[in-house]
Image (cartoon, rainbow, N blue to C red; front, side):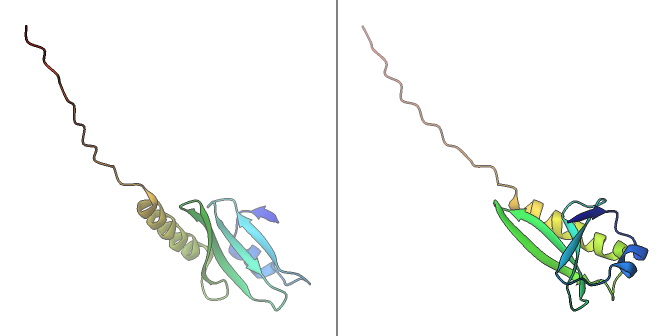
Length: 102
């Protein structure tokens, strides 16, 4: 696993290897480039929702630039954050008073 700031130049020189490898983006946590042995290069988002890790493909690195991938990833992270935020619970408190009269 490699961690670098993803740039257009880095995307061009990320050549396939014998096994799939990933390059994590330093600018946006959870975004990475996955390069497969067949030469397929995709942007992928790794996010956690309700304590479950999810991977979502953002798009093909040959068809979009890194800035577009970051913008899409940010929108998806914001959407996950909004839906994963627990809604406030309304509590009803009842009390019973016992009054002793003399």
